[in-house]
Structures are given as C-alpha cells and as structure tokens.
Amino acid sequence: MGCCRSRWAIAVAAALLWTDGWAQRTATPRADLLLVGGRVLDGAGGDWVWADIAITGDRISFVGHARSSNVRAKDTVSVTGLLVTPGLWDVHSHEEVGREPGKWAKPFVTQGVTTVILGVDGFGDNEIAATFARYRRQGITVNAARFVGHGPARTKAMGTDFARPARPDEIEAMRGYVRKGMAEGALGFSTGLAYNPGYYSTTEEVIALNRVAAESGGIYDTHDRDMGVSYKGIGFLNSVTEAIRIAEEGGTPLVFSHFNTLGLKAHPDMPEAIRRIEAARGRGVNVMAAQIVYTASESSVDGHLMPRWAPAGGPDSLLARLKDERAWARMEPEILEILTNRGGPTKILITEGPKEFTKRSLADIAAQWGTSPTEAIRRLLIMTHGTRLMDMNLDIYSIENVRTLARKDWVMTTTDGYTPATETTYTHPRTYGGFTKKFTQLVRDEKWISMPYAVRGMTSLPASFYGIPNRGLVKPGFHADLAIFDEARIQERASYDQPRQYSEGTVHVLVNGKFALRDGKVTGVLAGQPIRRGGR
Image 1 (tube, helix red, strand yellow):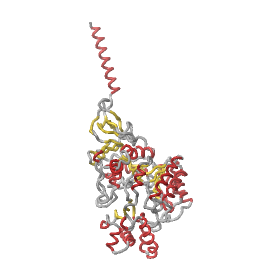
Image 2 (spheres, rainbow, N blue to C red; image 1 turned 45 degrees about the vertical axis):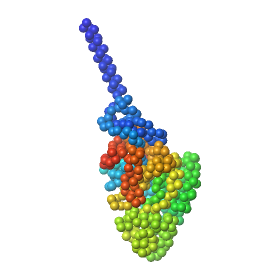
Image 3 (cartoon, rainbow, N blue to C red; image 1 turned 60 degrees about the vertical axis):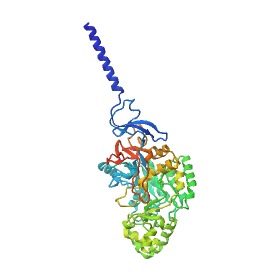
Image 4 (cartoon, helix red, strand yellow; image 1 turned 45 degrees about the horizontal axis):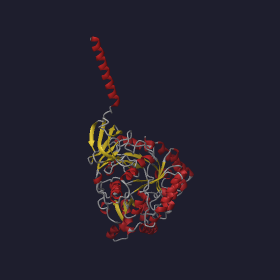
C-alpha cells in the first residue's frame, strides 16, 4: 500500500511539474501596456482590423486578440472603436526640438506626429553627434533624424564670399564638412538651392558633395533651385531635371522637400514634372517627394521677396545695401517684379517680425505708411536688421496640383513648420494642421484618397525610404510609436485667421512606448530618440 501511494505521489508531482513547465513555456510575459479593441491600420496600406496591441518597454510585443492569447499588462487602456496607426512622420520639419518651446512639439504630437526629419533646406550643420548628445541629455518629445546641409558647408569653406562658383579646394573643404556629418549619422545631404549661399553653386559642385553622401548610403534632400517664381531662375522643369541629375550622377535616392509649383505660370508644368520623375523612377532612380496640403507658402522676406545678391554677405551687408540709394535703385524694380510674380502685395502677410505688423498684408502696411509696397519692405527689413522677418504668400500653390500629387505613391507629407517662438507670434496654419487637413479634406470630405493610403504615405513609406528599420508599422518587434484617433472627430482647427489652434480628434500618441499625448492632453513625457542613419 505504501508503495502504491508513493508511486501515486510521484506521478502527481511529475504531472504538476509538467503542467507548470508547459504554462511557463506558453504564457505570454506580462506587458507594460495593453491597448484593447482598436481598429488597427498597420501602415502598410491595407484595411483596418480589430486587434489589441501590447507594448513592452519601447517595443510592440503583441498584435492580435489578447484575451484568447492570455496576454496581460500592468496598464490596460481601452481604445475600442478608435483608429490605431503607426506614429506619423513629418519628413520636412523645422522644429527646434533641442530648445524651448520646440522640445515639447505640441503642434506635432496633437496631430499624431512622432518623428521629424530636420536639417532640411540645406540648413543642417555637421555636428550630428553633439546635437544628438544634447537631445539625449535634455530630452525630446518626438524622434528626430537630421541631414547635413549645403549652406553651412559652403559658408564654412567660403565665408561671406559665396556669391560665385566655388574653387576646387573649396569644394574639397565642403566635401570634408559633409563627410563628417555623414560619419556621425546624418541621413544624407540637403540643399536649399533657391536660397543663399546655395543659389550660387553650380550643379557640378552639388553632385561632388552628394557623392560624399552616397559613400555612406545617404539620401539627397532638396529644396530645388526654382519652384516657379525664383527671380531670374532656371524654371520649374529645369529645376526638377537638375535635382534628378544630382541624385542620379551622385548615386543617391532623392526627395523633393515640398514638391509643388509656385505661381500661376508654373502650375501647368506639373504633369510634365511628374512625367520626368516617373521616367527617372522607371530607370531605377529612387525619387520621392513630400507635399504641403495648404495653398500658401512661408519663408523669410529676404528669401522670398529679394534678388539673391541683395542679402549676400549676411544681415549687415543687406542693411548697408538697403540704406545705399544706388543699391536701392537697382534693388527696388527687381523686388517689384518678384512681388508681381507672387501675386502682389495683398498676397503677402507678415508672420514674424514687429508685433504691430504681424498678420497684416504688405499692401495694408504700405497704405498705413503712405508709401509703395517695395518701400514698405525696405523699412521693415531696416527695422528688423534683416533677421527673423517672415512672410506668408497666399494662393501661391495650386490645390489641383495638391490633389494630383496626393494620389502618387511616391509622395509623403510635411508641415514644413516649427513651433512659434512666442505665444503671440502669428504663423502658418500648416504647423498645427498639415497632417490633419490631409485627413479631413482629401480623405473624409473629398474622398480623393483613402485613409489606409494616406496613413501609409505618412508612416511606412517614409520609414522605408529613409532606411529606418523597425519603425513605421504596427508590428511586433517594432518601436511603439503609435497614433490613436477618434476618426469621426478628426479636424484641423488651425486657419489662416487663427493658425495657433491644435488639431482635434487625436486621442493618444505614444513615442517609444510612452504617452506623449493621453486623452487628448500633452503629457510632457520626453521619450523621443535621436535617430542616426540606419536607425541607430
């Protein structure tokens, strides 16, 4: 009898050990966060599915049905009926994530943006390692990747004497500048050929610098030379062709920063520009573009409204020329021609500058002063010493071209914006509504594109193009960058009259597994990461 009992006890103990071992092998570890009941758009372009998402640390650890898979978490949040997407990518941003107020990125996270691409328009320096160290030290809200720019490279090599073609030794110095930025993790090489100092560069110079980016597998990002209204420019179609040549001969992919035509004369050229891009893609050049969905642009007055020679040499040189009557006699008719091409002084609004003139048209300011619009520009620039005087050019983009580009599978989305430095600064509404407006206007109201298609162009498409692995999809193992929307409530509130209004309908945003936005409120959690080329 004792022997039987002993054998029975051993059998029971063995069964328990086997059961406990099986449970340990099959049970899913407890996650940090579980989002239950969402309508998940994974970012690849397909339709949504009902699914739960578990997050462990900064990664997605499970996508599926949590209850049937025995998935548990420390924190469970119901997102029943809400639309869950990967976090959105602003692929051409000027957000100052390294300082106040840009480090909080409020206009961006309230739209669902979790990653921004910086150093664009040729403005990015090559201090990538130091900049990223600062980001890590002080914390940033959204992920950030950077380009190394042509402008600082050219200025470093040539100083203020940049209004000419570069010498071979200067080009070699620029190549060294770019090489350092690439070695420290820049995504690639960026130009702003419509601005100083890039305006004075030759195509061959830019190709030589782009080849440095190619050595490291980098990308060529460009605000190309002439979007349609550049004074004495090369024309929109020639500008498109030049950009493709720089990428093709330089050996890199290409992204047009904010692709569209500026001005009525250039708007009909869009079909031919698209044909040239798609011909290049057909022969293997990886050409992409980003678009702004508003019809107004924004830039500096010295960049928008002046011939390139006028601000050459910096603010002090510009100020001297504005005060010199002979220089002004040359400058004024050229400014008038630029104004005419841009639609006239009623289409120019001051967005950043002396408070009493912001949100007012150039025509209105000139009328108040009893002077011409050109003379008003002169006075405003002298008042501000030619720095931080920004303007918005109304009705410069074609909405028909915006719609056409939105349907191209090589087009991404951008705000081209930044958080205004002060609470009273007037600004372009694109910073606060660039992504939301695409959802409301082109997806919901006009039904021009579908929501899965729009989300793909804002998530997995840029992640793939910029070569950043494990981001841009709702998928186990990927970083937990997520945007969660109440689709029926998505609405941009920003307008030209009241631009500083946060978007509605964004319920939660997670950056690397942490809530940057929870229940519609910015949390202040700084979970963003600097991202080097290749996703490091």
